[in-house]
Image 1 (cartoon, one colour):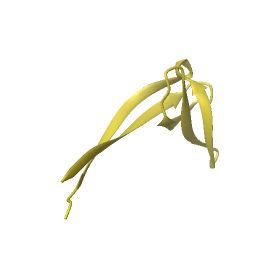
Image 2 (image 1 turned 90 degrees about the vertical axis):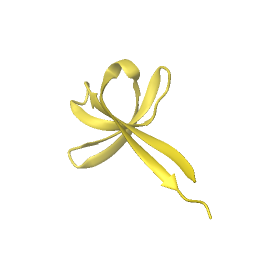
Image 3 (image 1 turned 60 degrees about the vertical axis):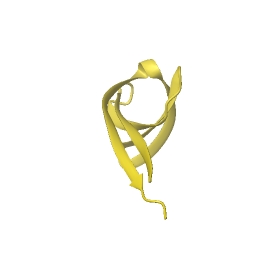
Image 4 (image 1 turned 135 degrees about the vertical axis):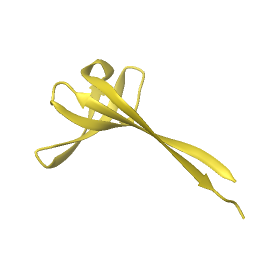
Length: 65
């Protein structure tokens, strides 16, 4: 049995005044995906430019044969 976790960080981007999710978290900057006015964006933000509101963890279990 193989067990692993996926973590999604839900953030609020102050400059854009909208919510998004972190695709790749870095030490000083992160790649954030967000939707504004129906257009999907993926931009690099410094970590001080957004606030992490929630962390969602999905647990995956795969059975090996």
